[in-house]
Length: 454
Image 1 (cartoon, rainbow, N blue to C red):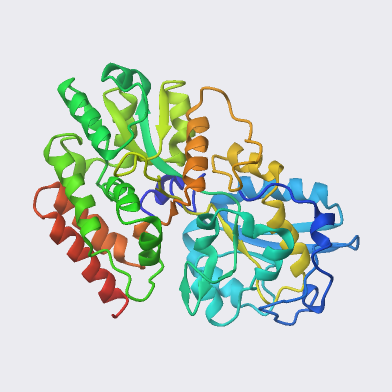
Image 2: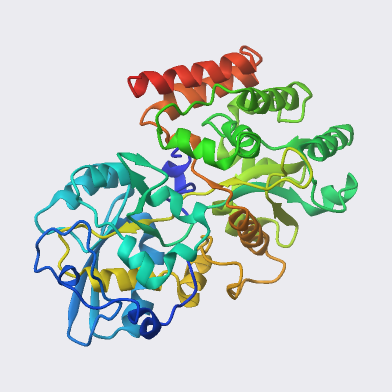
């Protein structure tokens, strides 16, 4: 999802990590050093014998990422090299707007980085350019992670979402509903809404009180947020993810998808969104919410630091409630950076140790300090976050979504052109009352099939 990235890298892959620190010594007992661990530059895309010990000899790892992730990457590198003083990590950061063009060239280079930002798992696996991490996942125990934290980085037969693992995240984005605590109390919200029906009732009460029920900004496509937050639970995380991953036969032309669009349409027609919703951009939406006239704001973790400054201790955050009470919750949640290991890297064991470090409690704290959500198990110690901050609520919501295996990629990333050519214009037509929910879904699906040449 790219629409807010141009301003201050607000969204996925732009803004603002994994199982807890496993004992390297204990994990080393699971495997032995093998030829794939240090291949002398030869491409080994599927190592079978790996080691979780990187020894004591000097090792230099080259890392490639986007400039917007420099702060979090530099902090991770400093902490990792302090733990492994024989390892030096040399980073290269490209401007964010050229990483999409430069990353494939970096990956295909005769001397690629040892750790590289993975933009497309399927593209990286077509020519065996990325290392299959299954052996490392077994050695380090990464498979203990909630499935939805790894699904985006798996691929099989040219389709992402299942199969072997090819990358691991440094942290995640998280989406859901910000809410004004005082206004929530004013409309009688004593607990998070348990269902979409409960949420709708609160939106109605907000309108009756002269408030904007839900601050939606659709000049750049933010109107897709409430739709997908509903779609994630109505259609289910797995089916939505399969559609984004272009799985054969995947479709959003379903009754559940139309129902999600109908709900958004009903909210819009009931006056729960701002009157000029299609003219409102992300900056204006922030200002409207900060004016303390909006109850809910469907957005993501990238705004938490800003809201903690402009509205200290006045804002809470919850996942979008399920369609029916008692159901599981889900949310759009992409990687900050998904790091993979090029198959031509001669330092796979050391690079895998870096990926494993992303699972440590120390790395989890670094992710949160930089505004990202830490992946990992619910049994891990929670990172330290300022009490009363909205970031604390966002992190708790992420843990809940993660435990429910509810992480879903953004639908705007399903194809290269679908965001600007379908989601944005079609959502504007829907919210302007110039299209029906059925047309909205059908037109997006048609564009999807056209781009994929199906």
